[in-house]
Amino acid sequence: MIPKLLHPVPCVIEKIDRAGTIMDEDAREPIQSASRPTTVTVPGQVEWGTQMGLEAAKTGPRETSSGYVLFRRIDLEAAGVTLEDNDRLAKLGDVETDVYINRLEWKGHYPDQGGPTMVKAYFADRAPSKQTRGEI
View 1 (cartoon, rainbow, N blue to C red):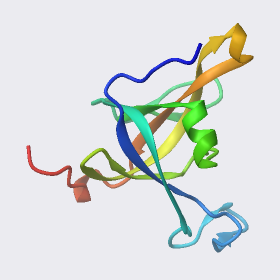
View 2 (cartoon, helix red, strand yellow):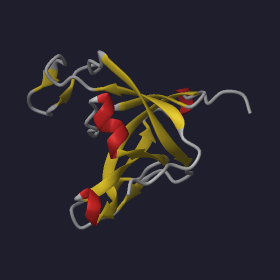
View 3 (cartoon, one colour):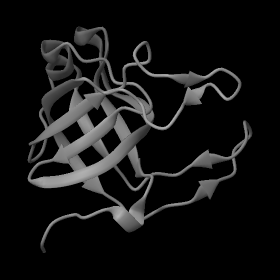
View 4 (cartoon, rainbow, N blue to C red):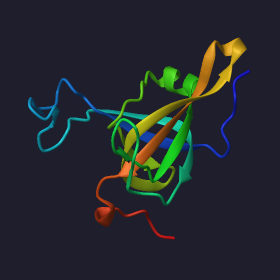
């Protein structure tokens, strides 16, 4: 059994290219901006949230998300995509965005599929004041 998405929309994912990005060796983060040459469109179920900020966890502070996109693993595999933290979601449906994946969760574990069939990609807006989400 392969689960279905509710109201899927095309989601444009820009993969981070760690090899092509100039990194700060001490901070282990990109200098200025990360290289994102690969763009892929995959159907996803988008849920916008309102929660932003930091949350206390046993392992230290964790950034909360402003929403998530639920992807089917079969769609990601067909497009040759492996999601990672810091991948950019450039467009969710008809909405131009500038949000970044900050956490992944495996979902929909079915015995006949050998494990998870979906991945929930939580995202956060790094510069909310610059964000335009289209006309409402």
